[in-house]
Length: 54
Image: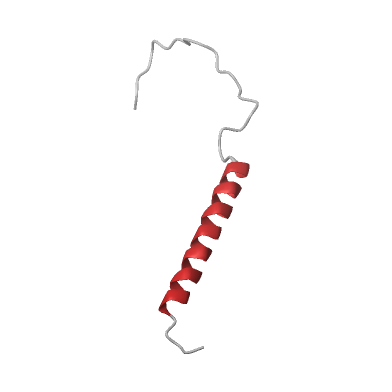
């Protein structure tokens, strides 16, 4: 067991009115941009690797 005798409050806690995390708008923007880049990259790679005669 801990024997704690001398405890003092240095400062009062303050409540944040805005949530710190997660930032949903930023996460949605980053996910959209990365998804588009990944989709375009995969489509270009598949186009380059396609060896069929058209």
